[in-house]
Length: 318
Ligand SMILES: [Zn+2]
Image (cartoon, rainbow, N blue to C red; front, top):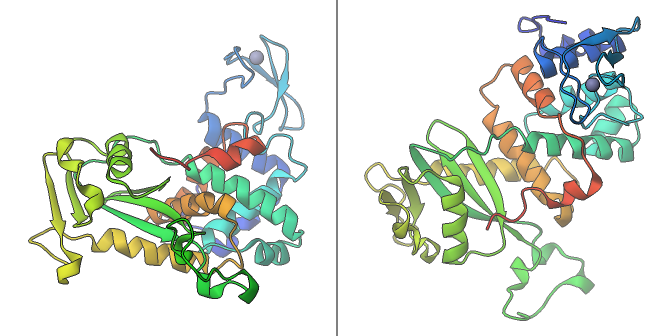
């Protein structure tokens, strides 16, 4: 089904996906772009019989049946595809994300189901980034995300520094954000802020000919070995611009993430990296039209997802 939804308002977008057959055909069109390939392992045949229901197909070569959802995060789901589409629409129409409790209420599904679906869609959003090295001018910064010690319940508050870990940082995770000027952002969780970790994370994700803009943290001490072009601003001396060099844009991303996090009642440390991937995907799609966002998320749903994958992806960069 090749329909142009670009002139349709966001509020009417859902109306076009009430019918299950339309949803399957729309997914098939996005996934295969008119050239259908059998998704069964080792087959790759393009010859297919279409069932009368318009949803199921049978491969002429391997004789196995499949649907547009085969080999995607929707495979084996008890929820109908039209319900998944409604969740995707809700997820992208809210600029700061949406909590599973609110989503459950809006769509009349349980919070547990809403969480199950959004977690898988967050994983899909993490796959939107093609992983190519960032080029041009790249701003780099690290951020700590997680709860504050002062907000812990009084009998869980940590009163002293234990094992050299500041109580305020005990439950925080460290992320490194790398932002191309007028381009995309990539955010990865890093285990610490040591110079070698930051160096390794940067060389894995940024082109060696890029011009780096950083602050004057000692974490960047090893960077000049890999990058010839590098400038910094000294925040300790209250310097926020040094010629053209600034890290204001990448620091602005942390405010964006915090705004994003306020939409949620509680974010588990175990899944925080997925919320971060959702925020960065949303940031990268901010200039797109609604349908382009929808199609981008839909294309990223290819690939069967196991529970163990949810915990491991995009966590440790170095
Ligand atoms: Zn086949």
